[in-house]
Image (cartoon, rainbow, N blue to C red; front, side, top):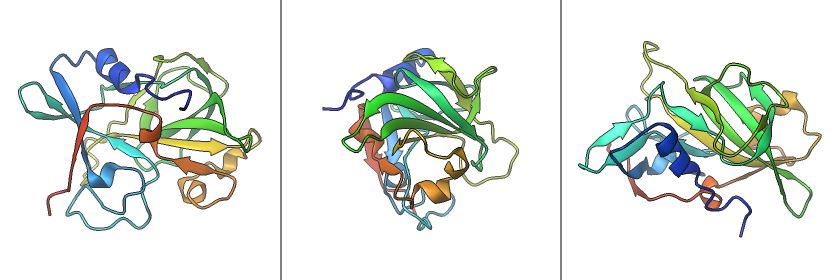
Length: 198
């Protein structure tokens, strides 16, 4: 059992945003960790397996499918410290938060909140408590993209001395120094998964 399992991140996401008609989260298969599928545009195949979990849609108590938007406040999933705020993100910024969870190799668990806009004053070494708001979902309206705004969450184990100039998505997925893991191994939520309509 991991220290962050069942920590309530998805509950915080609902409560901090006052979503009163929430029933469950909804994912296309391409939104899940390790998937090779696209869940936007005309579908198809990703160039590389997905490094995390895309959080975009939820079902209401009336059965309606709703989408997170640029007003969605993003809570941190556990106590931690901001390791970096990276511009290596095609929709917004990626915020890396180091947690006091260490694997058998001495690597530290980091949660990553991509396609986001950090709150004012969020910088490296900012100390966060579980549930603190660290960002909003990036506003991509008017950018003529075939993908809706959403929050990408990754979980990655890194050494304490991991170089910040290597916090790039193209590197994290292939370097031996980083170990990406499935966020659903640490987070729990009521959800359904369906294939993307082609």
